[in-house]
Amino acid sequence: MSTTPDPVHRPSAPTDGWVVLVPVKPPARGKSRLVGLDDDTRRALASAFALDTVAVCLATPGVAQVLVVTDDAGFASSLLALGAACIPDGDSGDLNATLRQAAAEAERRWPTLRPVALCADLPTLRPDDLADGLVALGVATGEAGAFVPDAAGVGTTAYAAAYDRFEPRYGGASRRAHLDAGCSEVAHAPATLRRDVDDLVDLQAATALGLGPRTATVVAGLGML
Image 1 (cartoon, helix red, strand yellow):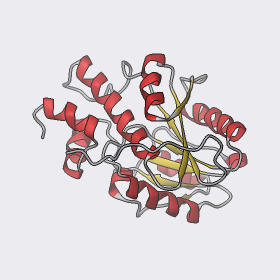
Image 2 (cartoon, rainbow, N blue to C red):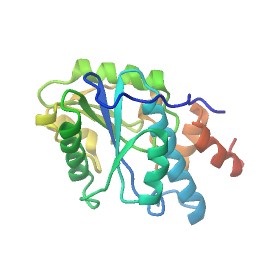
Image 3 (cartoon, rainbow, N blue to C red):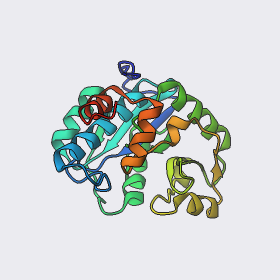
């Protein structure tokens, strides 16, 4: 069932709100942990996850811009069609370097916006839930920033900090890394903001929450709906 509204078009030079930074691996390389699925299905799911996530960001109150970082020029055209801005990934082997690069570019383009990094594999996310999460991140953000832990309580799905203090620590046990760095944890964020999808168990849990339209179409073809 589709839960994602049509994206809204953003003003060309917003002066308030959030800029969401979304790193997207080329779908051909993404979601290798979805063991048991063929390459075409993994590619389709990775694409659907990212498109559903970005569409929700664009439809969320308080989000002024969405900046996607990806090295897949063909897929970037699909993201541009939604209304996102896209830049190539100059540090494709280091997610945190990629996000710092994205924050620097966002500051150059939109210096008055607040940056927030968001995973691209949140296919259950809804605009109201993201809006609530952003409010909570804004309240919690101190000098070291704030973050939302994933559903497993190990990783991170969202991280926010001022441009001049933007130091994400994604990868592995990133929840602990963010806590050790002094970041504030938004532990009671909506479930759809914490439900990233890395494997089939995650996908089943996401399906129970309700999927975005593109992901739902792919999952229906797998007989999981």
